[in-house]
Image (cartoon, rainbow, N blue to C red; front, side):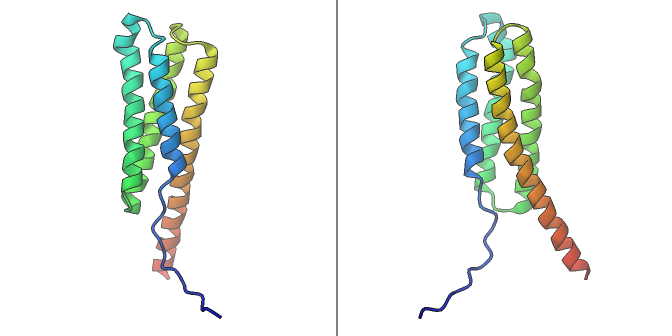
Length: 137
């Protein structure tokens, strides 16, 4: 009978769903960018597009780092960028660049990504507190 071997503790695995959702958000952003008028594309559309690109860039960075502290900071950064995006999307709706259905879909994508990111932040924060408690003893 083969002996069971213990696996060494692995670093926190990257979140593939996060990167996939960010890619979908970016695709949706470029699709919605086509609906903006020429004047709006230059200002609001560009800011929304650039913010979505920054979200994707941070998601790629999260996958490439294995340092927990750096990943923690990146999850907070992605949260910050998503909050900005969630403020810009209603402005686009109020200026009649996108429909309510588009706004709702866009906002849902942002919230799904944010839920994953903040779930990881809470998980990592709990682990940090557990490590600090064990060091005190």
